[in-house]
Length: 393
Image 1 (tube, rainbow, N blue to C red):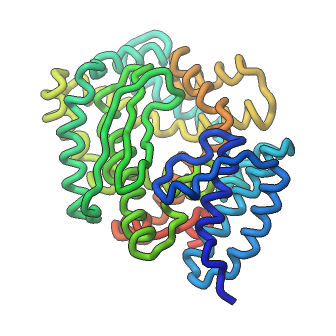
Image 2 (spheres, rainbow, N blue to C red):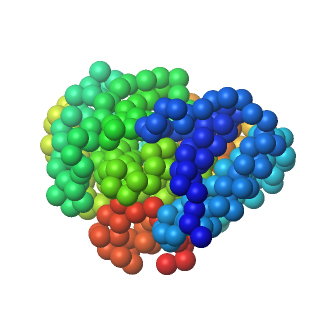
């Protein structure tokens, strides 16, 4: 049996219908506009439609396409249950939407990491204040962010082109924004284009700028979206890849790609040399201060899964916001402003479960690359692999 020829159209129409009830579910769309039907329909009707689509997906003959559609439509079915008012336990919500299991931080490991940081960070007084003092020395003034982004992106793009290739015609714009719950965002626009926004609500340190631009641009989100549009939509005719969904398994792979993007084109020593040398000079900062803060951020890598644990506390255990903020301030070593920004992010309906795509997705992709080498990263840019496939490999 062959699938209905309009399987992609049904998928895209259902996604837009869900977006009517849950704004932001469609993260980007570049396909036929007549399929972006936003006629309001009842959640029960959408749930029935998702069930029928999930059944028909089983008839897709290409294994890779079928598995991608299966997990994506399964997540869409979960979304129809949510918008219909069904209460789903939080951990089940994470698993059903993203094809991953939420991971909780080990408090003993976090405490050990804090003890190590106490000796690694110079000065006296509360640890978050000492770290913030070092961070302030490497902050890039808002008016210099776009000036510095230019040479960073040029280097990242060249390396991405050399290692993985880029489709002809890909491009993106970059803007500064404020009053957002996230630090940076890539908006897929279709036609191999996207827009990157950098949030300036909190000061941006130079040490985080290459990672941010690799994450959102080269070889991260923009590169993945443009590459898949060129290969999967234009060449194969799999039009479902012309839409990006916020609450679906593709995000766990996409965030895993983005969180490992800088490592895919530069090793740690190269990044440090670049930051402490050329980029520090361009930013008018002291290279020694940059290196000192890099040492601190490296030591902070032991503080894993803090934001996800905060989300489990907030949504899974219904802990008071004040308690969650205290947890973030202690284990994320966050200033009150940064802790509130994290709480704002995990409190958003579209991000409450999404937070695990970063940590779990990053680990899945890192394990995949460890097994398959640099070529494995390239495959993730080109192929519609699912979190379950990465975990099972």
